[in-house]
Amino acid sequence: MVSIEDVYHVSRLARLFIKEDEAEKFRKEFEEILSYFDVLDEIREDLKPTFHVLEITNVLRNDEAKKGLEQSEALMNAPRKEEGYFVGPRVVE
Image (cartoon, rainbow, N blue to C red):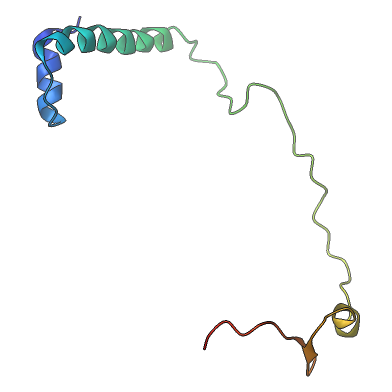
């Protein structure tokens, strides 16, 4: 059970000022939050942890090395090229 004193203690630790009418509201909220730990305590210890609700697998293709483009093929449609390289706009003055 969470007491009003506990609420004020936590608020002082968090450097928060709460009013008297807010203290009861926070006390109830703290109790609700702490009650969720009771639910977690009911979980079987042999239960396997999951990261996804549904069993999913990676749908991406395998990473396989393939031959890339030749330099001339890569530069074929470039609007500007110079000495075998792409030429872009100047960004530093």
